[in-house]
Image (cartoon, rainbow, N blue to C red; front, top):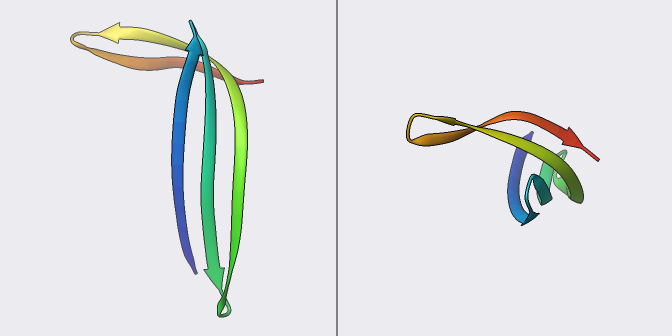
Length: 59
């Protein structure tokens, strides 16, 4: 079985993200394709010179 995924995230306003996940699963000589659009509230914290996700809530 082969699984592949591509995720695109767009920040539309402070702490709000919209993400599109496209993936495919291949097994038994055929492929299933999926595309999901999710919205989330995201909280970031600064860690030195980088930013990390502290919390994420799918809405």
